[in-house]
Length: 393
Image 1 (cartoon, rainbow, N blue to C red):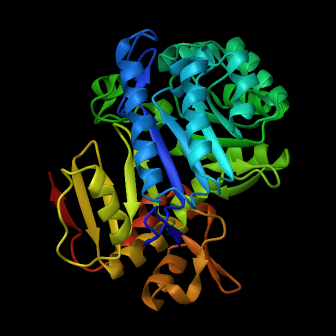
Image 2 (tube, rainbow, N blue to C red; image 1 turned 135 degrees about the vertical axis):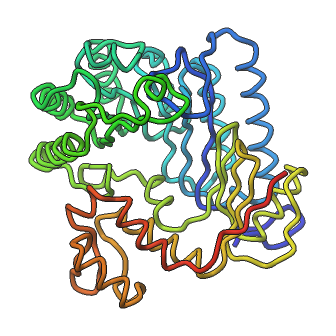
């Protein structure tokens, strides 16, 4: 528990996410809440000022007093420039005295040496770089701004800066082959990064790829290719000393992303910005509502409340639904969940379908479970009773 200025008890959230919705250009696969924006657009400074104001207001309410992790995501946070990004990093560090990890996302084309030099000084501990591929022809197909050489240069500079460095990679993409995927993986390993996240490309409605391929199954993105590439990533990364701790993430010893783990372990978090989401308890929700006055009043007691700012929706989860969600998210982790927390019928079904297995007193995902995540997580969510109540404003 923490204390507000008037000494009334307030439970702090465990994690903070700040969304920056600006990019140099929109990638062909991207369905995030972001838009192509010139770096000198006045809207960027205005948006940053509003986020800094909200951070201070929530800090004054005690909601950030015991926050352990913070993540600045996007969009492209590095489009803020060194001054703007460091102002945001510094303010988060200033109002979160218990912070253990502070990450900012970066794209190679807007990450410069000055930014890296200043990041640690202002309080950042990690940078997550959106590399996606180290093959120029693949980057061009994805509509990425940077080329492979720029990505390599910026990743090496980030490693040399002393920050913990994570790299995001994408597989099952146009022009990618098994051989080019292997080269990208080995090149990333050779640069000495601490953490690698690997994602198969998803073709989403409303994106350039969605307009080209939605309803189709391009050969470069079919399920067999996705599975083969994810298994190749596992083999290369584990051979290089990275341990898989989550379905899409690998880390060296002691370098797991604590913010990622917060999402999968039921820790409350506050999301600020255009595309952000929050997961709160009732007391925290009422404090957020005191700042965001348009949020609906909740009459019924519920243990978990989710807010989608972009969707203008609030979800109210019952105890059963919160439990099912915790089990579903927990199965993203290599450690799985306590076997006794899963109903016997569900546990039996998962084991029979080879989506999970028991290890001691834990139920953990199998390789098949990793690859067939929708089936695994859906079975866990089926434990929940009734529909999630949704309110709009």
